[in-house]
Image (cartoon, helix red, strand yellow):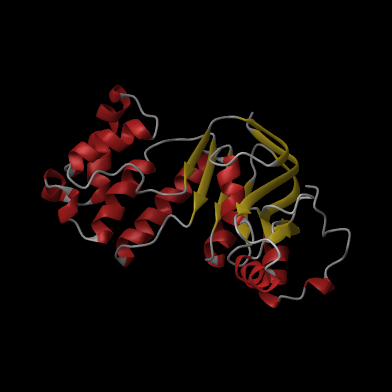
Length: 262
């Protein structure tokens, strides 16, 4: 069964040429939400995007990630997607991870919609045989019709997103990682895409979803992880954490619930 464990995981980004510039460091710290880490040598300053995270995520978990910009949501998803390696700590993942951090990844503007279905299907890990089986279904879901025979550079942004989303969500993953994947498009397609996303989430063993849309998180997630400056501020049942987040009054929450170890 799929599972994820993080033990004291840290992620640091070096910032060159920032030694002893305290004012500039304070400005960047405020804007990014990260913490500054200065080595003993003092030569290179680092922004700590994730700070000693301890998490245990098990089969059946549907977890929503919340927090202001720079709180560490995207950094955590990229670590779990193996895009970034932790600077410190241990990460153990059982199961195949499928990341929808950028649905436009691999799209070729000079190729047609049909050609991009094949190209991006391969990038997303499908075999040619699987792509052939899914090709008509993907094409139908896009609702693009004859436009699929045209280069996608002729598409509007919304049309490109339709195609990319339709391809990306044709894969059934064990561990699904998402970051604000539903953006452009008309209202009817956004609703259709949301329903498809929920279908995929239902068959995935583990789901982690970062979103600023609290209504989606309320509907789709059993638990919420609230990050602040790369640390766990609160983790627990969806309604409880979202109520606290909306009120922005963490001091009213019992201490035993506010625990970095999940």
